[in-house]
Length: 344
Ligand SMILES: *[C@@H]1O[C@H](CO)[C@@H](O)[C@H](O)[C@H]1NC(C)=O
Image (cartoon, rainbow, N blue to C red; front, top):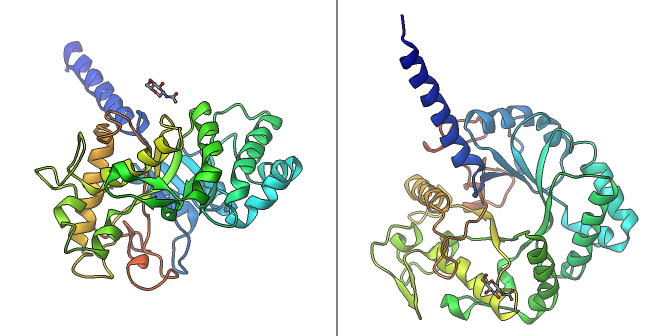
């Protein structure tokens, strides 16, 4: 018969496991995976959300408020980042009523049992013709959440386009284009005061693949043992940090140094542009990025600062442009992993 002591140890061990899981998945950092729907052979949403659960991927980013996916998320623990369509931003910004309608349609019916943590107003619309509407649309959505008595904190933010930066190298030279700066100053102030991050997409892969004679694979894959870029007092061992810090420099230049960043997309394709793409490179990049984020070391300009990160992406999607764009997935459409990564 097992002793009380042994049982006590079992209970203690079980609690430890639970605590470690909580630390890994509900601590300061969110690690999630983007769920894109540009494929004609993808599994039904219930099976996809089951897969998220089995694989302990506890955070899901949706580009659009697709109701069949939100239905599948009912009663599930996954934290959800929900995007507006870019075409909807102007309307949401145009009146409080239009914004209320959006929230009534896409948030109110789900918020009681879908764990919505973020709403992203616009994906890569700053800079661009819709950029002028983003600030007002964010404010309207926040008012709408309030109008419907939604007390759960939902962070309402936007995802910048890479073209928002006029300059990004070295990181201290990071600066927004005049057009992006014009709209971002107010938006970033607003988000900072509310404690919401701005989201950015960060792809060392594209920087590396466009200039592999100057950028080393080790630097792109978080494998450099020595600093590769020295930028004043800041030493860069990986390209990801350099790319993120270019945004922090740019935010300093528009006088919003303390707003934080979250990573709405980052990843590495497993095929489509050999030799830069490979299963091995994709696996290494994503693994090292995850360790980097969970290690909570921040970046040279923001040591110790944590950031929520959504890896890109769940499935290879056959309706995206041919080549690398179709090959960012962790899983084939039949739900088999492309490489070992998640614990499932
Ligand atoms: C940003 O945060 C730092 C450190 O907390 C603080 O010293 C500084 O005044 C803040 N800057 C602004 C513009 O609020």
